[in-house]
Length: 341
Image (cartoon, rainbow, N blue to C red):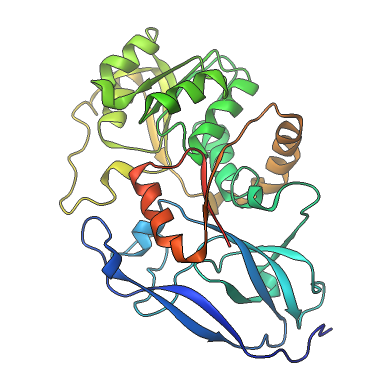
């Protein structure tokens, strides 16, 4: 069972949370350290990480406020999605040379229990896609659109943060499944062009160019049936204002308020939900893992054929993991932000 009973001592560079950020995270809130990695115990493997994921939700884990997931511990290495190669195994079913998806990112090497490692095939798809278009990011888009927002053929769909990893996939899945119109918002003219010319959105706008509500009304004069929310704030209020009767809003994230030090005001027009019989529902991808097999069956062929396009913003080096994360909060990425080790 054990491929490599004893390895020379392995050291790993890794990122620790040094203090809980107030407002925007600062470099001094983190520590980049070198630590010795233990040998894998019974049922464990040692993984050399190749790709790491940084995502907006990680900002919430840096706070100690009560939430749906435990906060990162001070003075301890942080966590996140990662794909790597098994370099030592003490577990049945996983051998040296296998590639696995796991949740022990922000570090070069990780000891991972076999039950927490999912074997992935580097020949079926690039390893980085298992962190994005075919991973948790993709499942988030799929479950939020199809289950939470109850998308149906002919719907008009609005997606905020549409050039991000989740948003870009939401819009394309909606088009592939027969949406009558898909509109996206993004933070640069280059991203707007990407949405229309490459991802096939019917319309897109730069939210920095003016009122989101006015730009949405111009892009969707007949209103919207589904809003997939990655941003919150003025985008959510604008969506409520354009919601058709029976419209549905799936709240995936609210990146516009993650670094606020004071509570953000809610939409002023919530009463409009009464007239439209509209529905707002938040969701977490962790509640929808039962959809994973269906998701892969349906989406992997779209990716392989090129019908569903994806972008990755790749940052090189574990030492730049923090800057990559801050870049996600700033909106620097197009598509999935990936750190390549």
